[in-house]
Image (cartoon, rainbow, N blue to C red):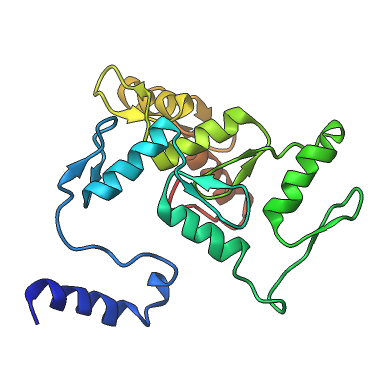
Length: 216
């Protein structure tokens, strides 16, 4: 067995029973030799780099043969088919419209129904991410969400050149340089630069249980 095959075997064997690795792709071994021509994101092969560029150009060459949906990535199409079209009769979950009680097999189906038939009642989920299927109530929210997939960060700090996907994130980061701490604790006058640590701190006074997100 060659070195690369042995490495791949080790990864597959020792992550198979690991709960934390379920549902995630097996980490690939090797360097990201190819780069996206638009954002310079590193990719493992030319095919992956070309597909990633579709996220920037808006091209959706991968079409589902069972419905009218198309996607920029082949893996996203595979996920769509698995999620929407490969369930057996006993596995199908029904999703009902709360307005007219029409039934759909998928959540995305009933959300599209809301947008098409009940938009006047405030139901508008027409903005759906073509990559992960998540729906949003506005095109602007969808646009911000898509940056998580494309890696697009248009807001740059003019002090350290660090980039951010949202203007609010840049504003919070700038406080690291300016020393500004606008959030003041009413109990002990301790000051904070960001809202999340401030809310977390308040719970130490009120006695509420703290659930701090490790990601944000």
